[in-house]
Length: 190
Image (cartoon, rainbow, N blue to C red; front, side, top):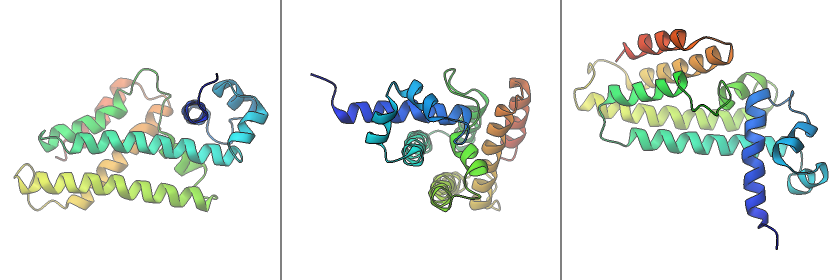
């Protein structure tokens, strides 16, 4: 008896996510998706309506993973500066098996300007991440961990931009020392 279809679909989405993350949407061919997922062309198109549908599912999967980790971190009792340091260092020291950069950031630059559906998905995701950060910063400010005159929403935008910049720099080949100096400078705001 074969594996359940849901297992195969989840495995294919994870593999496709990594392929799109590595090469981008346009540069990832159907043949590369077949190789990454282990599925034949007809299986991919029987399971997913199109390359775009598979990409959207892969992007949502990526967002769910990242947002769950971010929410878990920000809900801990760690001091605010340690939470922000952890977020920044996720970009400085990503998991060894991860492609460089960020699928969300890559998609914002590659697809959002001409794909309204993906642009809206990214906009909602970005709002969610900023809100998670804003709430954590607001809590830190209420605890006296940062200057009470600092604006939590502005700081959330800043952290979001700093992490995005770190991901772009990493994808562009900036070495670890360069990434760490960017992250330390950003952390100095707190």
